[in-house]
Amino acid sequence: MPVIKTPVTREEFKVYYALRYKVLREPWGHAKGTEKDDYEAISEHFMAVDEKTGEVLGVIKLYEKAPGVGHVSHMAVSIAHQHKGIGRFLVEAVEKRARERGFKTLGAMSRVTATAYFEKHGYHVAGIPTPHLGTTHLVWMEKEL
Image (cartoon, rainbow, N blue to C red):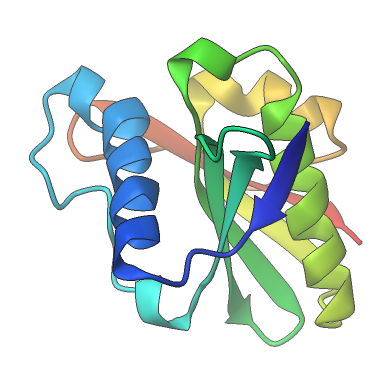
């Protein structure tokens, strides 16, 4: 059974960022370091962790994009644990935290290929696709909380 943890120690952050790189950047040949952005310091970071083994199954982060608007980004689920509900578990945890913080809207820059996933969770496309890191197209999606 997974639990949500916030990385605190250097080792936890190392594993957190390694998973983000492995799932979100490495397959497209992007350099290490591209798994981070300028918002890391002002973000809340979440990990889905196997309660028994301590293995990090997935990660996601949240920050305030504008007053009342939360931004979800860098959601990654380990290859071995995809299609097992870990992504949904992460999204639900972030949505809960966003409500606690008083956000009225929650948005994400989704890969165009992942829009159906976010639509299943009540998000809708609210922007136009734009290139990101040269090879990936992203689109702004949002959900009213």
